[in-house]
Image (cartoon, rainbow, N blue to C red; front, side, top):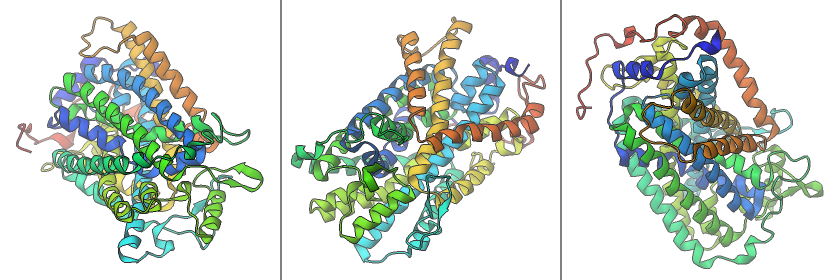
Length: 531
């Protein structure tokens, strides 16, 4: 039976110990990795999209998304401390609910991380173009600095000379981060730590400048689109905005995928997960309040005061019309925070935060690619994907093959798709994975209650169901097109599974203790500190 293919936790731990990645990350590095993944897109890029959906009510959106993440993080912490190996929700599902659902979770995580990395690459491109114009007056041709506009009615590209063909800056940053990850985890973490420091400093500056001049009138009406948006407008309103920006919180999940490369994971993984989430939520609220108070964040509407989704062709047409009149509201900006500062006569500071975004957003791309390649690595190590993908470079000690493949795919998506739709699509995979973790922690409490749990989820029979319910609510408040991506992507995954993984699976073939693949032959265990 497919659902009977459960890999025992002891076997998972033994496999990871035998064929492990180098353990080099401590609690501070883990927390910084989490902060690097979480703070970025939601603040620097998606603030404008959230404002279009919810107006000033996006303050509640950040609270809702943060609350769901908090309860999910507690579930992740218990499982990650018990199973300190790469693979995140995929590994946990394999041990609890079996191979088929584990494959579906892993396949959803591939969608989550890869699409998120593409979205941030597009966001970086917007800040890069804004800074280039501000500093030099030069602009890349629109055809080379943006992808085509996409209609929300059928996901077909809209032919319009005012939109681009390919986003070259997004391609460049995606491939550059891919190269960095191929060199090695330790080097990536060190660079990321520096980028996080720049990012936090820039956002702190933004808060210090904007909050003292906060205009309370900009908060009214507070929820112009209500909690769930106007009738017939899927994915709008406060909850719709929460569903969209939720993907910016995925960094804490990426921290758990680094468990196999963490020193003393039983203690350090929970610290990294919960610490990074707490720090980032505070920044989200403070920066959002500053942006709203400084220049307002009211949505723009189509003919007849109809709600329109950010990133759609209809939305782009309205923004273009406003731009001709010399008006660029927050919701239309591709560099939201820099635009806010310039609008209140702090052009130099606007350029400074634009510069910070340019050098800091790659840290988010780094963590998204990091998490996605590690999911592929573990699935290949289990035989569900070709084991060549689990090859570890003899010098760099990283899964270089899958990293390169992933980076190229991310660059292609970033070149052609808009950031708003990418964020929503990523969430469909994210929420499914988080839902499965919430279920897995409860199932494991029943199946294996005596197992040592270095970190135990408090009030688990309240926290885990709340996490699962929160994921369901947010999923059904995504735009319809984004919701449909998950079952379609899942169907494609099932074809791959039954064509290859079902036959090649190590557990399915009765190989519980997975043998060393050819890619590992001749590699000596690495001594900590020599990398």
